[in-house]
Length: 165
Image (cartoon, rainbow, N blue to C red; front, side):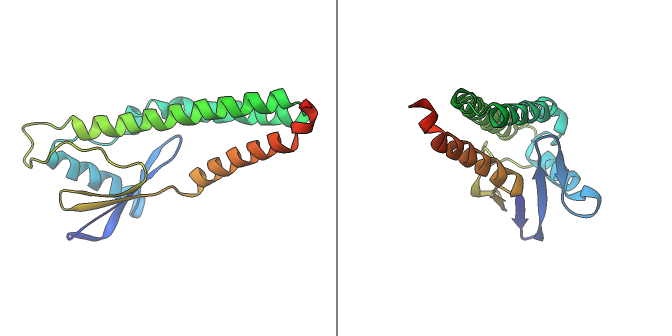
């Protein structure tokens, strides 16, 4: 996420990984600044501890890696189908869960906050105006690699289809 406002023309950056949240700037200072700004609108501070998915997501990626290795070693179409199904369930659940966390952050605003803004949901992907900030949220390398891996799984299924005939 990249947040830009008149008082932050260089912007504030927030990087979200499968296992942590990190702010941009020197020593990750942007995360603390974003949390301070969130206080003014009544949003709670951003914390990796609130994203319980970050505790189990690395293990899920490990499981998927093991299923990829199983499919490669045994070379059976059923293994590719299992892998694709699990990967799709994992992807839909992860995106939905993360969207719910963003929704909760933006809709649980403290009514006693100094600034009043209507509830909102930060975007997973896209551009949005929130108060005097413009939020730019686009996938980075890790997300593109996940999409590429789905394509590779589909290609493995396509090239293995003769096995089922």
